[in-house]
Length: 276
Image 1 (tube, rainbow, N blue to C red):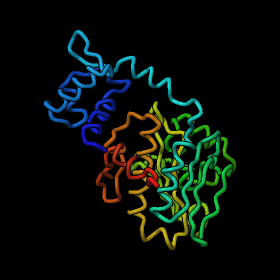
Image 2: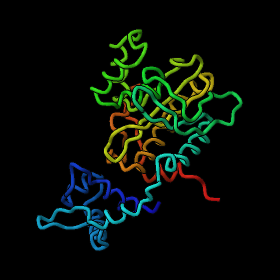
Image 3: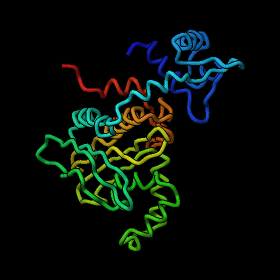
Image 4: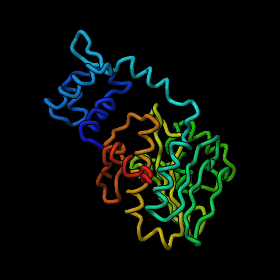
């Protein structure tokens, strides 16, 4: 993507529900852009009717954004948006990619892109699984509200057999590092990685997951985590999240260092299907 366009899009991302108006300096600081560059781009967006300069010299998004938002197809759902990213993630890893949703005390698979390998994990759309076991389920449980988590634990059959203190600690770790990874927790010999998909309210109801035989997955875990985190960031951007375009909040590697995420536009471009 052209650099100027990337930077202009970053300016839109500087605004969120807590920052509905910003000064020129604040815009530059929030997106890490030099003051002179910020001024030129903000001035261009203002002239184009996308930004409004208020009396106190702060800027806010214009009603033109609202008009454009109203043109978004009402039928455009997460399955439509995620399909190309899921296909590219499958290509990059060679493993099965699934889109999942939290529903009640279960997680439900809503979309699957299967690996072409004959040795594969079999996941089917519509599959219902408890939220207490497996990377995908625990990722979705981890991002539920505290009251919801306690209610789900109480209502799930067999929860009394689980070490609840250990479960709560695992959920806290998932939120801190920004992904879940398990080997053989639900199905022996299967490794799974799952990342959150943030919506426009910065809530998590969906997850993107990668599953495959441990014999193939375990030797490439760090590579696969990076690929999946980038895919989750790109899909979250499409969903309208105001989470940082540069880093999934809290995402950390095992050595404690943050997992860097390239700008959303760059990630989306990389994961977009190739032109034919």
